[in-house]
Length: 273
Image (cartoon, rainbow, N blue to C red; front, side, top):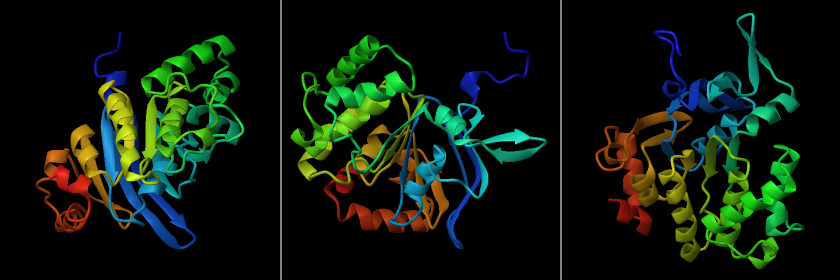
């Protein structure tokens, strides 16, 4: 029983970012980002190339070390611990343990080319989560069915299309039973005819209640699947809100300028309007 005034787990955002700052040398990439993502919600991050979108994702799971601010996932700091009011960098082993709760899907598929689909899916759960081989294979079979690739467990990545490889990459991330999924423009490397099959898997995942942060240029997906859309530009949050506000009736001139350029040049964008 929680004491009066004590927040429940549901009241704590799955992602809580405060004052996030990242520089490469003297070049600022993220300038004091604040961001909350509630449990079970989908946040889509949009913005021009070079705005810091991918860097933001990589900071969320501490693939990039931050220069200032804090990142909390499920109420716990990522990459740091507090001691005597100060933040101290964790050892890599401790960072890896906390990162295990975060799945990430990249632009490139990053599958192990020398391993079969099944081996790609069971390696991390058995090595990191210490699942039995039998349980890991059972989970892998369920996930392959979920992403529409049942029966392909013995195939090697080179025998699969780009869309199939990306769906396997999603299944591999899900095999770790993450609390949070990060997607870094997962369709940008795909031929246009393969984009839909990946987005369908992501829509199903969103509908199932998975907490997701998605960097995307697919405006139709953002409008259909997102609870919140965030426009990032020059390392700062320009506008944030529900998709019907940010994508249809934006408040900021910079948002209107970005959308006008995107929506006029992409079929997905025109569909989103």
